[in-house]
Every structure is written in C-alpha cells, then in structure tokens.
Image (cartoon, rainbow over all chains, first blue to last red; front, side, top):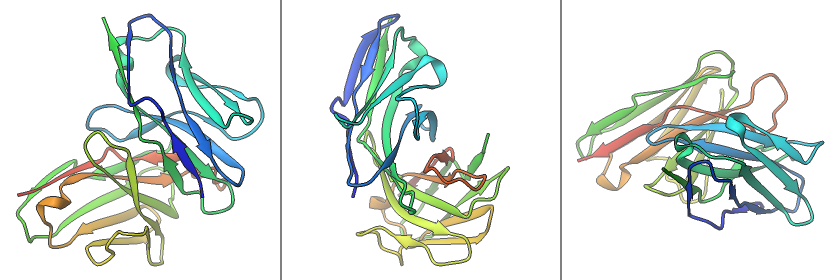
Length: 114
Length: 118
C-alpha cells in the first residue's frame, strides 16, 4: 500500500518569492509521482509527473520537482511565484503494478500575497 | 490533451431524491474512470474504480447501493446518488486514466460536480 504525506496544510508567500511545497511518500513497490493543482470549484490539472529517468522534472507554469528516492520525497518548487499561483496543490502517487490507482496527499494551500 | 467533462457542475436536490452525474471523455476512449469525493478543504477520497463493461470496484466504506456507478461505453461513466441525504452534499470529481495504451496512472479530471442536498 502507498501513502502520501504533505506536511504543510497552508503556505503563505509573498509575490516573486520562491516557494517549496513538501511531499513525502511511502510504498513497497515502484511508483509514479505526480503534482496536481486545483483552483476553486474546479477539477484538478496535472502540473508535472515523474515516471522514470531524470530526477528533476519540469512542469507547467514554471514549476519543477525533484524525485529523491533515498528520502522518499518529491518536493515541488518555483523560483518566483505569482498571485495567480494561489491554489490548492496535491501530491499523488500511483503504483505501477497494474492497478494504477492514485493516492492523494491532503493538499497544500498556497496563498501568494501581494 | 485528453479532455474529461462532467455534468452538471452544480446540482441542488431535495432529500430522498436521486441525482445522476455524468463523466465523459471527449477526445479519447477511457476504459477506466475513477470517482472521487472531496470534502471542504480536504483531499480527494477515492470512491470507486469504474471499468467499461463491468461492475465498478468500490473502496472500503463506500456504499455501492447508494452510489451507483455505470460505465456503459468507453466515453461515459455515470454516478447516481440514490436517496440523497444532506450528508451526501459534497464535491464529486471524476477522472480518467491516461489514454494511448500506456497507463502511467496520470489522471485527467473533470471539472467536478457540487451536490447540495436540502
């Protein structure tokens, strides 16, 4: 079974400052890792994903994440945030054993302040 | 990219009635769709996995007789909340797994449906 932990429920940050949203996972099998973003009253959209290969993954809107197998982490970063980045961010893990069900973390609310 | 559409986006119903929510994959065939429920300011809770042409697989604790899921075609899955009660009020989101034959677990989400039961 897999689990995902997002340690920070809320992260306030000033506009143009860097931000890191933390995600740790546990799994007994190999996994795929994802970050999704949710704007109010909307579904989720994919920011980026790690399947294999390079551990540094770049996504949309200037976000990137680094897969660290030894620390079982997949933290999301952006060097300079905008007001429009204010949203809920979810880390998710999917096993690659065949079921492909995704387990989501509890989410981190990023609030960008002017 | 793969587009998933949900309808209705908002629905208000009286207690005791049934409500159907549709989830369509618009530009690809989705053999597997997932239904999630999201409580305010909380994460997504997987309710069930919907497979085209077969019975849905429900997660532990989800009442299959209350939340009826039908996946009759490769582009449509429906969730029917039967005999709805106020505690069923929630945001319901569907998703489909990645098309193209290589399933990596990446999900494409509908816009969500907010159900309010009076």
